[in-house]
Image 1 (cartoon, helix red, strand yellow):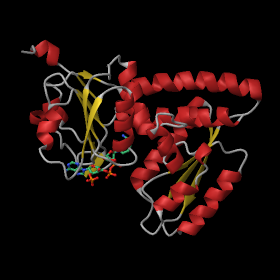
Image 2 (cartoon, rainbow, N blue to C red; image 1 turned 90 degrees about the vertical axis):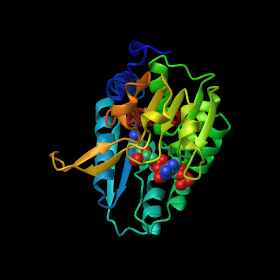
Image 3 (cartoon, rainbow, N blue to C red; image 1 turned 90 degrees about the horizontal axis):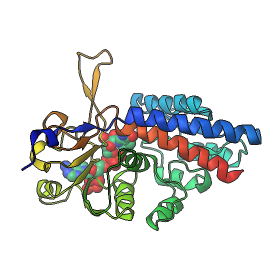
Length: 295
Ligand code: NDP
């Protein structure tokens, strides 16, 4: 029987950890840039007028400024065609000044996302979505690790939460989060089960998890009855729900029902302030790596 004291969850504060990482990256960037008289540069491309995407890009650009990475924000209208976006990517691929290229997803429906991702120079693909980077990650020899999965692993590591030997349950199998985080957990010797919309007995599978990564985009989906005592809970979900009590008019909800799950688990990430900031810190590391690899 686990006592109440043992089950009081510790909050995995992604803001504090990402601030620490950004300070470390800033120091390395400053030293490296001073030696070579060259600064890393990220090109962040935003297509259309989606509010949430605009906020994400703004936060990424702000983080660049904090760590001494130059950034260019390229905004294209919602009516942009695949060919027009390809033309910008070709320009960024060829530019000597640009080390990392970030295309904020999702793209408007008329744009062929797979074609766009494949067009990015893999050596500038700091999101690690290009097929060759996906392949390298799957082989355990990553050039870049996708930012959200990288941020999750770093948050666990920096909080001395062991991965090897754990039963890890990943809910969601997207190319961006579910699959790569499952691959990384496997490489770190977890026993990994990936769940998706066709999974039967999902609650029972989650209940076996020493570690649950919830990345399905369904607010408060994971409830206390699906979580075993003392599990580690990583909540990747971010959904905007209307909330008239907030100045912004919306509240951000994770995929985990925080109020019921947090008394039962050992560690949990909040939303906001958990995985989101870690994703940005990982992007800074990838952009700096792209620059170092090039120079
Ligand atoms: P996708 O929509 O691409 O994928 C969702 C996955 O969840 C799919 O694999 C889907 O299964 C699965 N799923 C959907 N419904 C269920 C269900 N009822 N039971 C089990 N599985 C289900 O989402 P993303 O991976 O891109 O994003 C997931 C969430 O994470 C979103 O809220 C997103 O906003 C957030 N996010 C947060 C980031 C951060 O930095 N914090 C970064 C990226 C995303 P199937 O494959 O069968 O359809």
